Structure formats: structure tokens, C-alpha cells
Length: 278
Image (cartoon, rainbow, N blue to C red; front, top):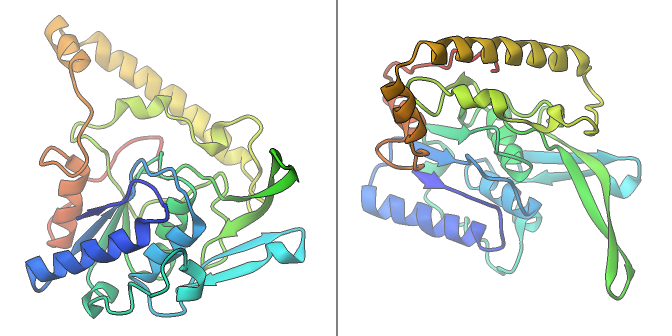
């Protein structure tokens, strides 16, 4: 089990150390869970590097396209595309098992940007099974243009595209297997907003969003009505129990989504989400 909370300068060397430690401690690794839940993103190089740890050398990870020529770029699983402060490719001597071991990537509505790049790349290359909830849908590139010694302007200059050429803007990465965070379901999901729910979000240039937006609003109203009906039937004791319920600690024995990922890797049945919002 490996959890990445953000993509920073230390992410790549830290991941390499973690994977090497797992290999040394566990011998023959039969399955791996990469947890990107609640990971809001970070450095593009970090996302490319994390993907490169599990993909063949020079496999396409992500591309960018914008109005200017310099916005059109391809990023492959090559050290030159994820080199940060390290002069040495820390993945060069990584055990080869990590290029082929069965993998599950856990995502949710708060997995955004760089997280979606990793999930999209591993999904398109059929390198991992994506499990959880549809991701946030932040598929745009920002560039900082200096204006003076103490000011700058951040501009959106391009879109991200997965290896298959799909834009994740607004739509996000859909899981191969939708799974709830809690065994009894996630009623609070009805309150979660993604990129597509923002009134002035950047439009996806590949697909019409109107039907999805209308469907989401319809399903949200249906889900709210269903939750209200369920709550109306609850006893005061059940309502008090709901109020005292604590958020799940990712990676703990109480982490239902993680237990489903482990079950999948063992070839056991998985409880799929029945949410109308997925």
C-alpha cells in the first residue's frame, strides 16, 4: 500500500524509497494499491515520474495542447520529463516487479490535476484498475507570467490529455470499478462539487457537457430525496450515531475502499457503489 498526498519535489525519491523498502520487506509482491484519494495535485514532473515507476520506458504519460505552439507537448516516462533536483534516475534500479505487478489506484472526487494525470495514464495503458469515485476534473495547465519584480499573472494556457487523447477537463477520470468510501454508502456525496459543477468552469472541448450537467442535477435531487426519506425513518439513537461518525482514516483497517481494493487483487468479490451520482 502506497499513499501519495500531493506531488512535490520529494515525491519521486520518496516513492522510489518506499517501493524499494516494500520489495525488500515483502519479497515477492503480488499486488499493489496506489492511493491518490484527496490528492489535489502538484508538480507535473511529479505526476510523470510516479507514472514512470509503473510504465514501460518512454510510454506516453500525458500531452498538453493549447493555442500556442509551445503549449503543445508530449511527456513520456523518460527521466528527462520528470527530472527535478535529482541528477540520478531513482527509478533506474527499481525492481522490475513494479512494472507488471497487479495494481489498483484509489481515487475520489478530491483527486485532481496531477492525480488525474497518473490515474488516466495507468488506466489508458491498462496498467492498473482505477477504483473509487469519479475524480475532480481539473484538466487545465496554468502558466505564470512575470509582470514585475514582485508581481506575476497566472494564465490558463493549455489542456491536459491522457495517452489515448482524452481530455479530463470537467469530466474527470471515471473509475473502472466505482466503490463507496463506506460500506453502507456515501450519502454526503450529494454535497460534493466537482469542476463541472462550477458555473464558470473551463469547458471540455471534446464533449458536450450539457447532458452530463443536467443528469447530475437530476440525480442529485433524486439522491437528496432518497436520503431525506431514509433519515425520516431513523430513530433518535441512529441519528446521534450518524452525528458522532468520524471520517475514515485512509490506510487503516476501517478503510472500506482499501479493503475492496485488496479483495479485488485477491480475486474476491467487490461491493460496487450503487450511487446515482457515479
